[in-house]
Length: 187
Image (cartoon, rainbow, N blue to C red; front, side, top):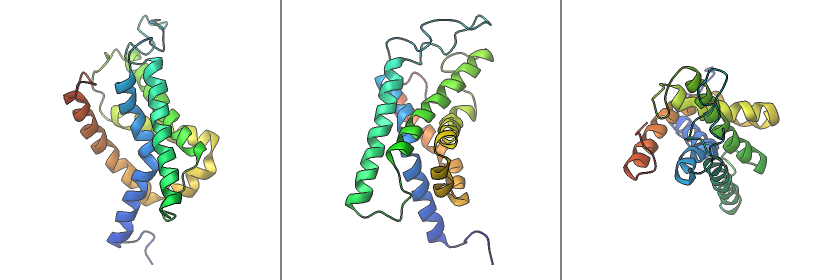
């Protein structure tokens, strides 16, 4: 008996479930770029190494706009699951969507902090970290606050899909953001 199904329908559903779970985490980064500007979260301060803590690209307006956008799309998911009997998809809750949205942007902030410590400039590409910061941040926050939701909803096939689809979606969304003028670089 196989531990993981080889049925193609099973894997397609796992991919849809992965996207369903991650939408409240995927939306905030793009929305933060749209809503960004204004006061930087670090208020222009530097860390003990003389470098900015996060940089000008991380603003309160972007953070709040990004989180609210992630929560809004999550609320739409919760409504759609109820209105259209989508019970087969993973169950989102207000807490799960809020943690996914906040965690995604906290992961992005942590990555920016580490980039500054490594001497990388704002907008400079950092392979893998640029793609998976939101996944790590959102999953760590869920693990700390709402672990039962994480363990009930993230199966191995769903995790595989998240690992595969995140860099692809990240790239496509950033290219679109670059061409419509909300991002300075296409990565």
